[in-house]
Length: 126
Image 1 (tube, one colour):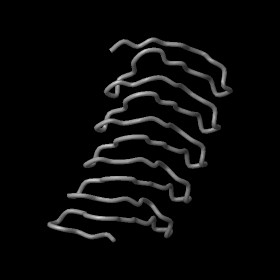
Image 2: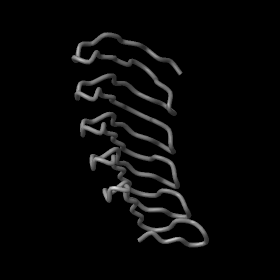
Image 3: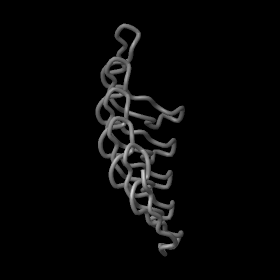
């Protein structure tokens, strides 16, 4: 755990907040994040979870507010948002949903107010 090889982080690492709570946990390869990672707020709530490939987000990711509510969920490919994403308000209501290609909004996106009412539909063309 917490190993350095040739001045680069390697293997499984954990870091703690000054309070002693877990701040993050995950693996490094050649000094870059690799594999499954979790990061936490100082209050102990999960901040995000997802996978890295050579330091870039890759695969399914979820982020959270410090109250534990889901903030977003979606996929990355080579560090870029790609595919279907949803974003939420801190009260748990859906804020918006739609697709990304190469971190650019594509196609129909729907936007909702804080109470869950649809307020806008937008169409994006890359």
